[in-house]
Amino acid sequence: MSKLYNPFILSDGNKPSCMQMLQLILDGEASHEQEAYFKSHMDQCSPCFKSYSLDIKIKELLKTRCCGESAPTELIEQIKMQISQNATS
Amino acid sequence: MEETIKQHYPEKEKNEIFNNEFLPHISSMYNFGYRLTLDRDDAKDLVQDTYLKAYRFIESFQKGTNAKAWLFRILKNSFINDYRKKTKEPSKVDYQEVEAYYNSEDVDRQITPDLRVESLKDMIGDEISNALNSLDVDFRTVIILCDLEGFKYEEMAKILDIPIGTVRSRLHRARNLLKEKLSEYAKSMGYKNTEL
Ligand SMILES: [Zn+2]
Image (tube, rainbow over all chains, first blue to last red; front, side):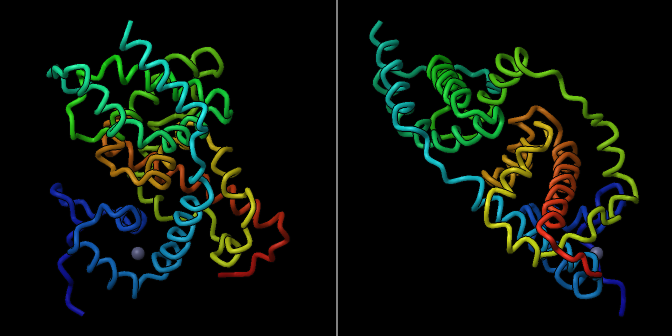
């Protein structure tokens, strides 16, 4: 296969490593061009392929397991009260 | 606060900004405070303190801009200046090392080849949360901002006052440490670590 144009290559000519590319993809920091390139890269690179599904899963778990708790209502009330006191004083 | 252009808001508008742009982020802020301090009472104090500061400095906030990032930055600074100083010793992490590693060829070496997607499926309890909490606070912070709150690298760089390159390397290191921890849990849960 002829060498595909690699949109990950930086302006200084350096090519990011697999894990660096993967990170940009995972965090939604890659351009459409880079995403397309990475998809075809993943077909031929098993470390990327394996890490990709693992990393996505961990990111998903973090989001569902570590957020979602609401701030206590008394905290919100307390803040509002202090603000209105400060504003009037 | 990086924009020093002062706004002038009448009292009524201040309250509108506070209620419509600041308060909607309070649960994210509380979660951030909790993940930093690992204590719900400390989190409350930190959040309250942050909101009072935000109100006091409201004229450094430009209406309609990224309130969430602005608030997170205040909370993070309060944590470092007020909270961390009195309770915790400074970070022992060598960030130059973290960065050098990230920019080396070793970065592609898999650190935890035994962690598999299948073993994560059984982590339905507090494993993920505990693994996150066990990380050094600076590593924990980048994961919270990126994976829990969905901030972009550029926003994270502003919140943390570090270059984007440092955001990337820190995030990479943080995720590897998290995987190591998860892999320990997977082992203790009796997983046979078969070859990938
Ligand atoms: Zn690869």
